[in-house]
Length: 123
Image (cartoon, rainbow, N blue to C red; front, side):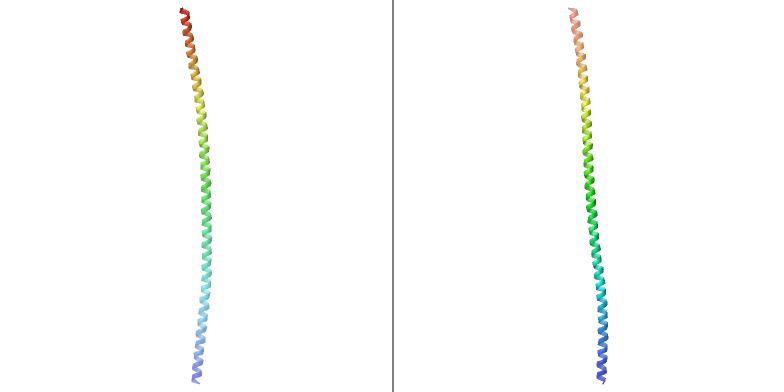
């Protein structure tokens, strides 16, 4: 009988230990699952953040490219405007030179005419 109660106590202790281990295992599984879920959530959040950062970088690069194109076009327009202004000024300068040359030629011609008249009057 003593042996039966010893076996019974041993069985009860084993059942309690088994129950405690099962409870502990269930708690660890829950913790692992929640930690796994938390870990997966963290990975997903990091992935989303990396995607967002990549999109931001692409948007910044696109904006920089558009700004560069706009600046290049502005420089081309300014250069074109400057070239047009130089051509216009060169044309004005050339017309002024032609007018001066014509006036000087006219003045020389008049001087020559006066000299010819003076020479013909002397003769």
